[in-house]
Length: 163
Ligand code: FEO
Image 1 (tube, helix red, strand yellow):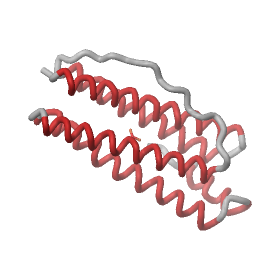
Image 2 (cartoon, rainbow, N blue to C red; image 1 turned 45 degrees about the vertical axis):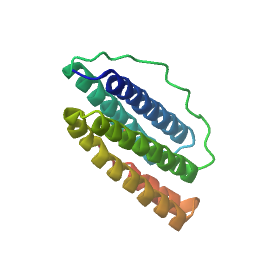
Image 3 (cartoon, protein in one colour; image 1 turned 90 degrees about the vertical axis):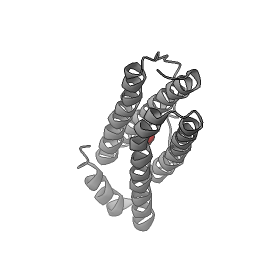
């Protein structure tokens, strides 16, 4: 059985994960629009991954006899200045999600909810990986610059992402 405050915070996290999905789907659409298939693929895979994050929370709430309450998903931006801009916005957003997960862990500790603390450990680890991936791509984009063959080289690399 979940405490009300925990249930509410987990439901808010579902919304944040769904917004993440929506944001990356928008970046995928933009990448397709400007002809960068690799970037479009990377963000499409990320979109799907975010939906699985939301579903992990959804299933956990049900497993703990809680009530899932879905709310409006905010509109994501639809225009981006460049591929670097998309990845800088991605990193900034993931830092926000990391803080949100950490706040949730703090709340679970405060409420003596051991099950939720353990459940959230997966997300804590996942956030480390997500931020690291974003930083790696940002470094590459800065290194090669955003035009010409360097950008297409990165695009070719990102087309290989499957999960
Ligand atoms: Fe689900 Fe990208 O955090």
